[in-house]
Image (cartoon, rainbow, N blue to C red):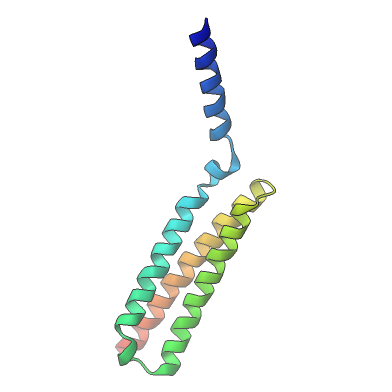
Length: 114
């Protein structure tokens, strides 16, 4: 009888964890992907820093700053969520951070081809 209660409690805890907004939106996974994209773009920028004019480098850096801003904003929404809406915003901001990091790499590649 005691094992049945323990099993039932374990299943209940697992079900509650699975239904939480954080697990549904997978915020930490998106944050990790965004950070990886930012790190990659930053490494690429640093490797060609001497080869690009400062004006062009500043524009690439501005896109990376935007990516970091969106990632930090998403983490803020995730840390103190009021509900599913905040988790959805966190994922959206993480996705925006990934896009800004990719845009920085594309702009850098464009400038390098000139």
